[in-house]
Image 1: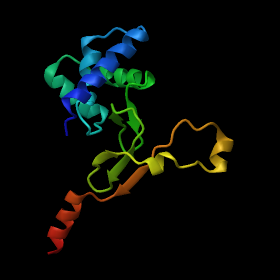
Image 2: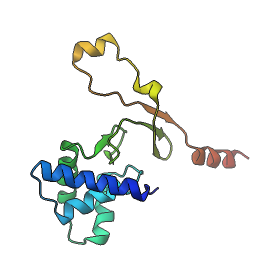
Image 3: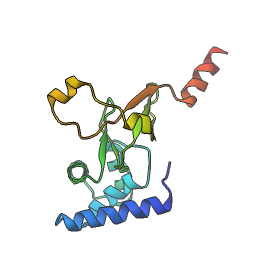
Length: 153
């Protein structure tokens, strides 16, 4: 699903600001790769990003996409959603959580102050400092439930 135009503009401005502040060139390839993530809330994997960007830029290599995703993550412009399977990427960097469908792999963002306020157990604090808490809720999406119901009717 596409993000609102004002949100896409905000993400693209942030991209340019962080690149310039960090001394990174705002290349056409970097901009296309980032905008592919910034314009959607689908959490695509690297192969999907490569395929979509390649439609607009046939010469973009898989290696360029992987290296750029790693760089964008390092700069805090994207996050990697902690989902099983291939790494999935997210341009929404503010605090949020994920619902993951265990059947089809759908990933949806949600915000929860209650989950933001979870306190890590003392054991975790002994391992190190906690920067953030991101919760993953796993279940079956409505679409998959409807398909299953249709098979049983």
